[in-house]
Structure formats: structure tokens, C-alpha cells
Length: 336
Image (cartoon, rainbow, N blue to C red; front, side, top):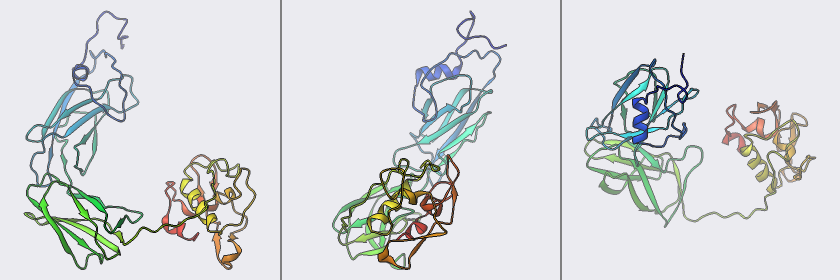
């Protein structure tokens, strides 16, 4: 039977608890309290591994953070260690009763795996750094870089020694121009030059290995485009109809607000202040007409999607959101 740690006369401090007292750290999943655990009936074990650069050399100074994955019946603060000069690390004192998570981090670096879970002895918890573009690297929307401004191109150097070649394409990759050749330190400041394009990409090539990485497409613009709009405010919770709680609807709400600012939505009854809250989740028929200046254009409201805290929602939420709650940018465009 497990004894109360603070009532019984005999208790012990586990190896991990002692280590935590000596080397406290931070870990996003766990508490910062320390409880002395009675571990007479719990076996302990050790884990180890390595962190390497992209080409397999040991990476020194990588932070390894450990913590217990809830639910659990003890609370211990997280522990942090760092890799040695050969990229190796090891830690003892883990209890066989619990499941742990380790996460790795090093400023300026990305890794193929950012964390691993374990609940038994392991000697192969190994990680490898990535050679990858950090900026520009937009996925859903184009990053816009303005001609004449200074931007910092960033990439994960992956521990590769030597120089890299920085190149730019304005036509999606058919033709490239060299911007600079510099030491592989993970960043370079570039003053954006014209002409404008919607198909720009950055390529970083490690010269010794000829390993290349590319950014996603981004925009180069001669001048910043400014549009002054009077945008009506719609509250995604208070202006929605009663059967829709508004959670995860920030994307749909933004679309409704912008569409209303362009005069594309006819004011409708709403329980809140805004006359456009109706469009967040409800349908009148299979479609609803837009404002008179867009005669013939109709916004489909016949699709639905389950909202996170209520019944299925129609309207903008049902039409432009994925089942995960994320916004579908292509369907959002249909409102314009």
C-alpha cells in the first residue's frame, strides 16, 4: 500500500526529484511544484540519445526538457539538461509507473521531431536538425515584401559548416538570380528590389553539399496598397443567433464583416447589435441574395458544419470552415 509521503516516518527522495531540485527548468505541459515521492515499490530507469546536425555531426548545447504527462498522482517540476560537445545526452531516475515527454530546442534551429514520449528505458531517443526556410514561408496567404524595405531572410542552418548561396526567383522557379554568398549563420538582411511579382521564392543552397531549400511563394510589391473601409463590427458570440455559440467562428466573422463593408450583405434580424450576425450560422433558404448592386450573385448557405460546442451551423461558418474549425480561404473568396 502506498504510504502518505508526509505522515509516515520513512520516505525517500528519488533521483529525478533530487535532480529537479538542483536543476529546475521550464516545460509547457507541467507544474512547478515539488512533491517528495515514496518510490520504494517503483523501479527507476534511464534514457539517452543524441542530437545531430543535418549531416550527422553531434550538435552541442541543445536543451532537452523532461516532464511527466498527466494524468498522474505526483507533481514534479520539469528538468532541463543540454547535449555535450558530441551531441550526446543521458538522464536517470525516471519511474516505471509514469509516462514522460521530452522536448528539444535550440535558438535558430528546427528539428524533424520536436518531442518524444517514453515510459521505459531507451537509448535511441535521437534527433536531427532540419535545413529549412523560416522566413518567408507563408502557407495560406502570401507574405508581401515591399520594394525598398529591409527584410531578414531566415533559415535553420542545421549545423552545416561553410557558406550558403542566397537566390531569388520572380517567376516561380524558372529563373534565379544570386543575392549573396555568406557563411551559414541562419539569416541575412536583404533590401527588397523590384519588379513586382506574385511568384517570388527564396532559395538557400549549402555550397559544399549542394543541398538546397526553397521558401513558399511570396509577393514583391512596388507600393503598399491601402484601402479605407468602414467595417461594421460583428461580435461572433453576442450577435450570433441563439443556437450558435460562436466558438471557432473568428474566420467566418471576419468574412461577414468585410463582405458587409463592401455592401454585399443585406441587413437581417439579429439578437445582438449588428444586423449581420444572422450570416454567421443561419440559412433562410438554400441561398441568400447579396446586396442589390451584385444582382445575380448568391452566397450558398446550404452547407453545414458541426460547431465545437453546439449543433451544426450553416451560414458563413458552415460554408467556409473545415471540420477542424480552420477556415478554407478558397471558400471565403466566394463571398467576394
